Image (cartoon, rainbow over all chains, first blue to last red):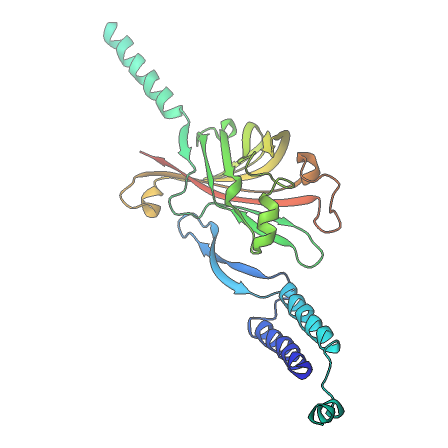
Length: 91
Length: 202
């Protein structure tokens, strides 16, 4: 159990880092929409169209690190069954 | 004599009709019209825009200094990329879009008018209303009159276009938007960039 929690914590950090990097390593806040510039040829005006896209930011990384920290913290309080206690049960 | 008076009357009426300002409707069917805004913040600046723009401007190409108009932005159309920031922005502590659904600029006077060809630059004084607070502002504008260009933009519709561009800065504290609060997180100054086109069908 202890080991499993720690493995999940590490996987969470590594997975979040990989996803954040793959999505463009955005050092701002997480975005769920991104602007796309469009130009009107007649007027020369530059407009913006928003399209739905999830871009993880530093808050996403922070949440993943926090989650991993909580899991690692919980793992410290999980008792490991010692071999001695197993033997005692068997006897 | 009677005929001469009639002709004179018709000529005068035609002159008045020609000199009358054209009415431009700024509800954009193409969805290009945009009011962008920017606020500085520590991690990254908050950039967004509003697309719910409508209003009317009366513009006379022969007398651009007499331009009058009123442009309204629907507060609910303000968008920023982060959903939580947008929720806060439209919430009661910031814009309170539910109680104050519109942002309005109504022009009163054009000053320092300089017209070159189809382009006019001027300083416009008007009333800017945001979150229920109205303040008089003077902002620089650039007007571009595009005669007979409406059909290029909207097929099968003849008419003229008027493009308005303006960039100016307001302070959120002037409009009771969290005055004196969170200035370390969100700047007091709000940069606004208006790029809109209106149509005057014939």
